[in-house]
Every structure is written in C-alpha cells, then in structure tokens.
Image 1 (cartoon, each protein chain N blue to C red):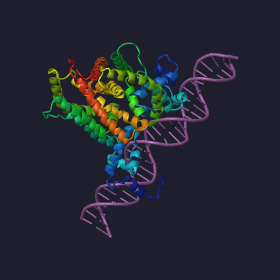
Image 2: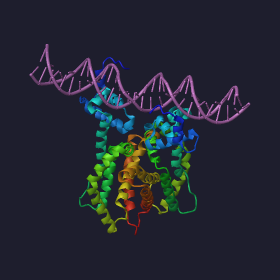
Image 3: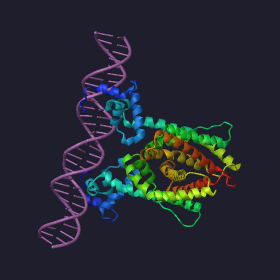
Image 4: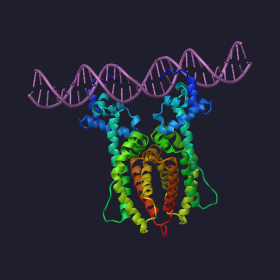
Length: 222
Length: 222
DNA sequence: AATTTATTTAATAGAGTTATTAAATTGGAT
DNA sequence: ATCCAATTTAATAACTCTATTAAATAAATT
C-alpha cells in the first residue's frame, strides 16, 4: 500500500475540485475532520490523506497542528457568537425582535451543525484555548449585552414580561437551541432518519424553542 | 526520575486511603481522569501514575483500556438515565411530580457534574458505543416513556397544560438542566467563582429551569 | 534556456501509546 | 521453612503521532 506506482495521479484524483490551491484544500479538509472528531482524534496524517497530499505538506503550510486548528476554531467561534453580538434596533416590538434573534441563532446552527461539538470539545475542555478567547469576547460584546439587558428589564418593568435575569434568558435560549444538534447523530444513526426528515424535525424544533421561550416569558398575572 | 530508590514506599504514599485494593484504586483514578479528559486524552500510563502503580498493572486487571472505560461509562450512563426511567405514581398532581422530576435530575447532575461531558464526548462522538447502549435503553424504558406520555397528553386534553409533544418537553428539560454544567469550567476558571458561589448559582439555576418549564406549560387561554 | 522560488515528497528522529511477557515480590497456607 | 498463588514490576515489541530535513519536482522570472 506504500509503493503506489503513480502518486501524483492519485493525489489529483482525491484532491479533485479543480482546486489546485492545496493550502485551501488542506484547510477545508482539516475543518471537516476537526469538526467531526475534535482536535485530538485527528492526525495530520488523516488530514493529508483526505486532502490528497503528503503529510509533511500539512506542516509546511501550517507548521503545527495546533496552528491549523486555531485558525479553524477562531473562525467558527466568531461565527457562532456573531448572532449574540449583534443588536437589531429596528422599531419592531421587543418580543418580535427576540423571536427573530432566536430563529437566526437556530438557523446559523443548522448551517453549522458541528459547532456545538467543537465548542464543548475544545473550548470547554481546553483551559488554554478558553482563556485566550473569553477575554477577547467579553470585552468586545459587553456593550451589546448591556443594551439587551436594558431593554429586557424595561419590558419587565412595564409588566410585558415575567421577571427573569438576562443571563438566565440567554442561557435558556442557547441551551434549547443547541441541544438538538447534540442529538442529531443519534437520530441519524440509530433511528435512520434521512436528510429530509432531519430538516423537517429541525424546523419543528426551532418552532418549539421559540414557542417555549415566548410562553415562558408571559407575565404571571393572568 | 526512573530509578527511584524505594518504589513501594512511593506507591503507598500515593495510593494512600489505607485501601490496599489496587484494582479499586485504579478504577477510581481512571474514572476521575476519564470524566475530566475523555477517553482518548487519558493514557493507561496516566492512570497508573495517578493510582500509584505500574502501568502494566492497569492491563493486568482490566486487560484493555477500552474495557476499563466501558465499565465506567456504563455505570455513569445508567445513573444519568435512572431519573428518566423511573415513574413517581404517588397521588400528587402531575405538575408537582413533574417539578420534582426536574429537580431530581438536576440534583443528580450536581452530584455528577462531568456526566454531560462524558456523554457528549463518548456517546455522541463514538458510533460504536452509541449503538450498543441505545438499543438497550430504548427497549427497557419504552414502557415508562409511554406512561409519562399518556399522563401528559391527558393533562393537555383537560386544558391544564399547553399542547406540547412529550419528546419536546423532555428535550427541553434535559437541555436546560444540562447546559449550566457545560458552562461551569468557564465560570470557575474565567470568572474565578469559588465552590460556594458555584453551589449558590446552581441552586438558582435549578429554580430558574423549573420556573421556565412550568411557565412554558401554562395553557394559552388566560 | 537558465536560474530562482514555491510546492511537494520520502525518510526519519524522537516521543508517546497499548499491550504482552517474564521475572520479582508479597502474603498466606501447609 | 517451603511452596503457591496473587500481585506487581521491568523490559520491550509493535505500533502511531508530530515535526523536521533534505531532496525532488513544478512554476515563474529573467
């Protein structure tokens, strides 16, 4: 299996894509693998194999595996947070905008289903990565958090919404949005749901999360 | 560091516990490490070092690392599911019992904070482990699920509870209960919360989850 | 065409991994 | 005291992994 007669043909066959930029190819393959298995279960050999190049080339472009991973992780994490670091200041009512925010976050997860795994695996399990990112994010988005906080507490004062801390509400949204993506592998492999069924199920789930959150925010006095 | 003069003294010092059952010692150390880092980031050498014995001894007792892990995982997972596989048929009203169920599940997580990580890491990422367990559990607990389902839908019919699918409700509960445990490492290391603060925060969070679920179940017609 | 630069590979050092084996040690039972 | 079985260790085979290096090939520039 080592001494294949024509290696470059093999490479082209796998690399495919008419994309002769091997650096991009490696980055993309690495992304897929890291998202699927996490940092430590993917070797640079795996990445090279998938990209259709020699293992040394991965190190040539990115020097270390850690380097390569960082690039990918940073990008994904920024994406994940984007929705929480934006503020819709249109003049629609608060609850409408909140509903949209929840849906937008869920839609983002639909498009990037492996993000929750990546975050749990690498951000939460890895102290070093954590430290680096959290400070960064904390400072950048404090302002937006405060605006949201302010608005929410105002609505509560007006009696439009049941009293709840801003943090608890955000945690509730994230948790309920995220959880179904942890369950997807289970549903796919164990109950043999196909892509269409999954898509349908995700839409239902999105609706249910919005419903649950909205219902949970109704003020208590009937 | 290899040629320590008196190895057995060293071993006793570390093994401590007056527990001369090294097999138990290994199991316990392995559990702590696996829960903390997951299967692939723990080597049998790590386990041996922590238990204070030779690496070969780990294999002597458990033959393979996989074996050792399985034992631990099975036990933890059963524990995690226990609360979802029991049915309280006291004559208290449904909502009271539901509230208790949520709290009991949360309390179990408090006592086993690393379980959510273990499950995400090993059950969801590992196809083989998944298959083995899911069938087992599915068959065993179908009956209990049905009883819960029946009761819930009855309450909905009576108009005591907003319409919701049983599965969605269970997913909501699990997700909101679990999420804070994913966030704990962040809170501990990044915001320097101490044990007492964490304990307090967990109690608050438990209360908030119950509140959110209960509020979300109120029927819509005021 | 010749020369430089960028890309890619083969080979390998060096560290770490699991698992096995044979030998050493320990603590009873005889 | 001796023997025996259980426990524990040292040594090591047989991997896999990351990273580096020197050499080969392809592409671009002069």
